[in-house]
Image (cartoon, rainbow, N blue to C red; front, side):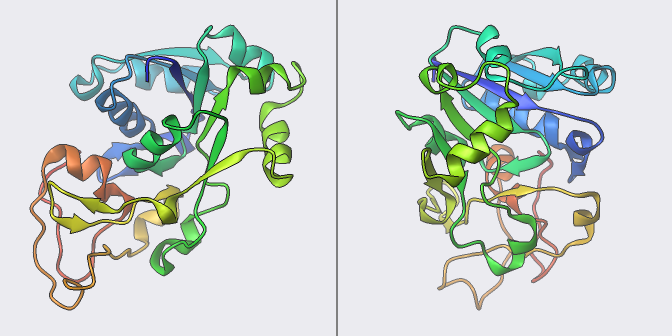
Length: 242
């Protein structure tokens, strides 16, 4: 992933919504660090608030540098993205979502621009999932072909709607986690303040579905895989905080 630069779009208060005690921006930075990234760019229309969060010491993301760029007075454009790095690709992720690490890896594996979609959202999470899901891998050549000053997300949405951008489908990704010996559906969903109250079920394999049991979770697996859900039913509990 040496040729990919993560770009987060983090605006308060949405990016600071907490899931299991960790806000979305913090969680994304932790995931990116675990995936091997050592630098990210954070665009924000609320740079003072987001900057204060980034300045807070956090050992789970201490090896990734987050460069804050204000977008309070001008929209995000292809030109502004290209100014951040000479890298070949940009991994663009809204920071008001939770995205399973496996889906970010799948995006980064593409050799062309691609947007994350979910063709078959699980029923229990359908109200939180939008299409496209938010994250996208964008190549330098793709950005150079866009209007340099046009709003980037409007241009990207138009390209996606016209089928000019490849997709990565969350519903078609391998959901088996070897270390956990479980099928765990990868999700990317937009978090809302009211979503704290939503009761989401953890999908297990069909052989386990009728036989609920406690999950044995390592810390990294919890954050990268199981925080796609708020586990509150079936007496299943996560045992560690991300």
